[in-house]
Length: 135
Ligand SMILES: [Zn+2]
Image (cartoon, rainbow, N blue to C red; front, side, top):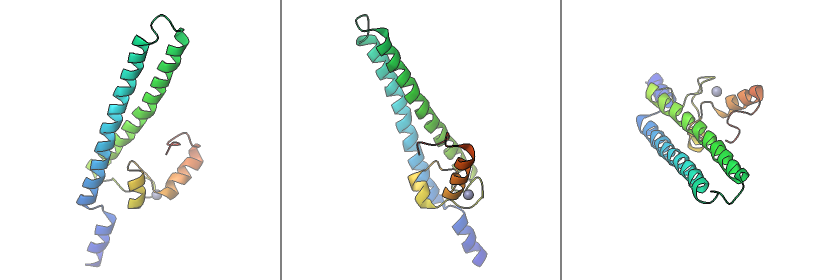
């Protein structure tokens, strides 16, 4: 009995998984829409406003900005994809470093979290903060 209870605590329950899956799918949809509208806006801007009157540098800056935004969004989409894959594989909500369950509060805040806060801090300290610095 005791071990059964313990197992239930460690493994995320299907309802919880479904909850986070929904959050992730919603976020995925949002980010995908963002990427499309960013790119569409950039193209639109380039087509209409900048045509032959304004100097090309404005367009370049705008394009550059759209690209950079797109990169950030793409990174988020990749993170979400990986989280969804972990849900499928049954490893979602488990720290990839110490194999301890990631607290649900953390997952609510960062549904794509691969590590618990302690391990994330250790990894960031080791790698510098180039990964996930925006989170
Ligand atoms: Zn950990």
